Length: 148
Image (cartoon, rainbow, N blue to C red):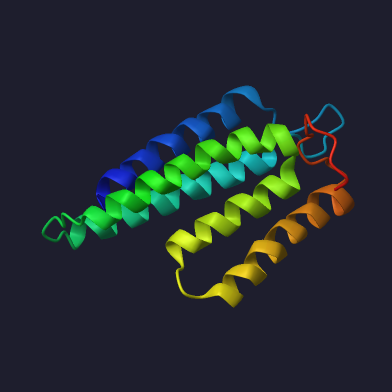
């Protein structure tokens, strides 16, 4: 399952990198770094690290594990991802991220409630402060007008 997942991540990262190189300019007209700089850097890194992880996984190939709990976690996280996209549009970026992260951590990090609570609040707060305050880029807007 790990190898199939890494192939999927590799395909997605190759597509992301292709879009970054094909559609986004590296420099602006004035010679500054343009909108394609960061996506090219991230995309190239994603491709390189995924190939590295895939080669490592293929080198230490093990017997396939048929653990039903693993597939249940995968399906639950996929459902949470779909729910996140809906919540993102309905209630906005910050509260949707808090809900998604909290529920995801309950699945992948069970039993560590204090750590999960801290991460659930800290990560979206840092993302909000980074993008909204420091970089002056707005978070996704909400359809419902909530006070936060």
